[in-house]
Image (cartoon, rainbow over all chains, first blue to last red; front, side):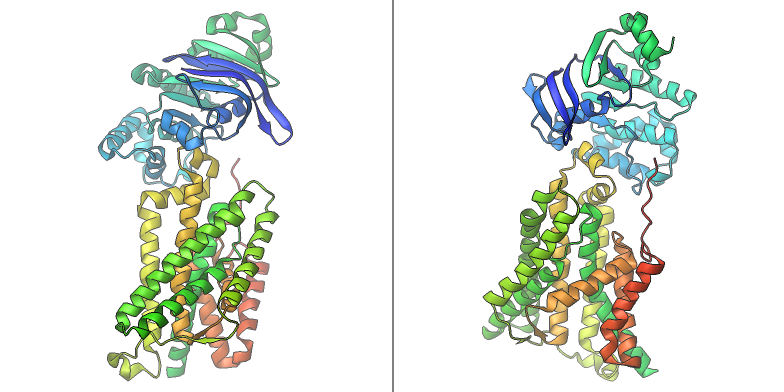
Length: 235
Length: 300
């Protein structure tokens, strides 16, 4: 479904990702783990077209998309929930969700999808008229994921959904990620520092170090890998 | 008491027009963080366009109402085209440049447009035709508040209501707010940010054009330089209200207009600008974020 080939990207003179090859198949949950500054977020921003790729190719269903504008990429069905959630602080919960459906015009279906995300996260229904900026961290994460779902993505990119959240909320978020994947056959690309949790719900994983893919394999294999255990799982 | 009311009304009129122009500054600042110093010139071009159209139409003997409407429409369309083009030429190529670069580009654009109108039209003051008649029903209060003032107040109120509906209720309006709050995220939900920026410039320019028409018919003369002072005053109003805040621009405009009016009436008309800019200095010292503006803080 999505294929990154020798992708290089960065900011100014800094090359944040030097050589990234990733392949994601339809229906999978793939995780990308790595330390701070390894290039995880840059990888996602490059897929979304916000950070331009300096070289290499990105193929989505066989089509080259590395030159496409961010809005075209959303139109193709790739949506991102960025790190730090990026809720529009002065838009209400409902308006944030409307913005998620920005490229859609099927009012009826949009309304149905709003009901769907409210069923996933009932707390959002209660807060629908409240400004996004007044929500707690966990609620903001739920809203950010719901907003991305409003575009009916084929591929959902999640950047550190567990960051800064309480363990209970993290468990809930990961449950929902599995549910979204199973119910809608949405392919998930999950970037995490929380390698343990991520590998437990993923089919396969990639490990990024200093802007290069250092290791990849099935999630079980990575969980058993002694180097990974030492570096990322704290065992 | 009559004198007080008279000053109050003329202050409101003045303030409403400042507010109309200030909205353009504040909306552009809200979206791309730029003080568009060429905005005053867009207003001046609006005044010139309506002048030319009104003069031509009155030669052909059009009725007054048709002249006003057509001149207004022409000014709105023409100024919007200028606003759109200025953004594309002078600001868009500098989107990722350091913040100072587009600011200097804006000042350059302002000087360019002034001189362009100077060369293409004239350096003289041109008498602007009286587009707003003295209404008969205003006769009893005409010594306190003129018909022009009433028309200006009603027009600006309507413009602001339309703007509010657009910003609050429409998809484009929501996208504008979203873009001003978080540009990266706006891109990630599929908003074409460049298009939203263009729309912002077009709306701001249209409001300035209406302001240009109204003030020109109020004062009765125009020249190529009127955009400078009006621009600076409207900028003051925007800062006063809190730049980036739309209600702030309206409030700032009204406060500035009333201050000027009372200062002129009770102190001396020589001190009009002194009071206006003193207000700016005080606000910058005591409440730099403006009356309704928010201090820039970021939740991490």
